[in-house]
Length: 372
Image (cartoon, rainbow, N blue to C red; front, top):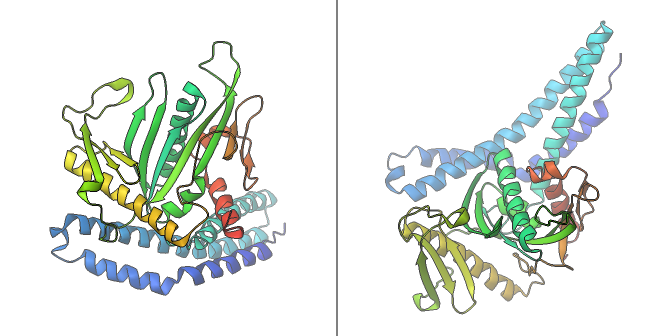
């Protein structure tokens, strides 16, 4: 049999070339060498926070370089595989190897597509870690249950990509689900990827909380902000904040901590509120909460100065009229993004973290229409 994948392989090599030009492999290699030098310094761990930053950045940079290098090697191997197919006399063996080559081509195409999308993430904050807040909206118990479904969806997405994800605060609803939750995803371009998730999400299903078994519509709001480096750029006077401490709690109100270690900071001039209860000590929770508060204040200030049309976190009301995505479980199965028209007919997979198609479509859509 004759297998001709040449044009498709050539197209992928062309796209990969464009990606490599944006990534700048030479600069990335030099950056890795510099980080390796810093990581090998004998006094590195004298400052644990700085050491953690160096080792994390090194790991991320090495992973990015390894990924682009592996794609080139996989394309080389694929061409060899095609040659084996065309030289094989055994038709059955040739067909089996051809199927393997087609599958590998599809896998490479998906990886190149992901790398290409990353080159579109050139915003000021795109490379930063992301802090995501989910809040239940209209819809009663179904809404709080939906909010928890979204929380699990994003955490499963992070797990599949081996990204570090930490739930920083959660407020549980009385009957089921959560009122709100805040979590951090520490990964390269976490904000750039997840920023397109900001907005109102809508769920339509046969409510498990309705004894009449009626179809129920509920909403949840997703806010995404970048977690910025600590700096003196945003000063928050003590007189501008109110700090409340309380006991951390889990589902059902059960105490999971015997001390008042959880912290809630209210920024009095703006009304912004940040709560943290993930860390074991009050000092750690206060530091984490202040960092998130400073990030929000900096974003707010820069947007006001630039008179942007839209806040990075969005003006999200979690109700009709401003939803970005619908998750329909009844009377049919579908998840559809209302901005990009991207849709799938497997909501279970989406709720299990299969979000890459929606993220890629959202990033491309935003690049085409940056003012949307």
